Image (cartoon, rainbow, N blue to C red; front, top):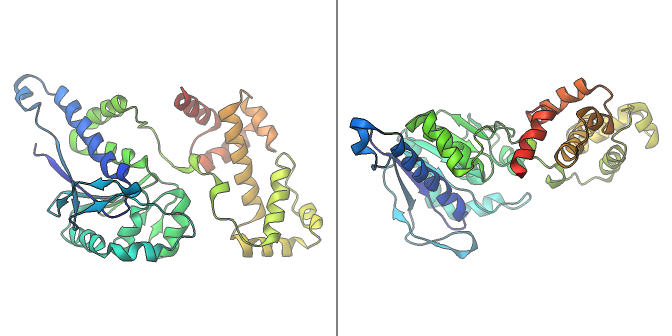
Length: 333
């Protein structure tokens, strides 16, 4: 089997760790694949299943932190990987992308030849600028998913997904999701057994299905209006209380209709949706840090029926409470 040619597109300010993360895991996979070869095939055990390179249209590239990267000129590869860069909510995305016109042109040209393109984290913004996300499903870091949707309204942004592939274009969630993508690539090119073994050797979790369990709403951009902030603060302070819309409206001296309208105008959602998010966030913390029973955790965030709580929790995180606790306890060992 010929080596799969994987090129990583380096550009000024890209995250160096995301430049080398995928090639490093592919190198490990090549070694693992070699150990799976036996008998008549043993002569090929030392040949790499992957040929990875760092490419750039520039002669010199300084990554994040000022690290200089050794790069090769652009050339034909089977898979082009576009790493992410430093981006925070509220920053000028267009201004950040403007100096990257040579890289965006390279991405567009590669895709036009029918070859696979992959973005890591906010590298998705370069794909969007190249026009590759129009009419496609995509994902990115949960912290910037809304920003990507605003920047590229023609994309169908799936903020809960770790890896999304749509007609030859793959996008991934934040940072470590590059390993989720790499394991999928290894499974397709070298087989599921090689991918599983590589995951074990690298201590990479191959069972992740969603980035939702990692979302921390406190880090998301907050609405600027005082009314919704006061309503949210009230709800956050009474997570264990029964949700009573009429009583909540009375607290703020407005009708229920006015409360719902003003809250939706400022946040784009309902008070109940915020309350459910806050309850799940608190429940996640309790499951991670205490030995309370699931029923006890449910009661502490306002649910008398553990079954109802479990369904809501799974809807928000992709895992039932016991599964969530077990996975985070494994990660802490």
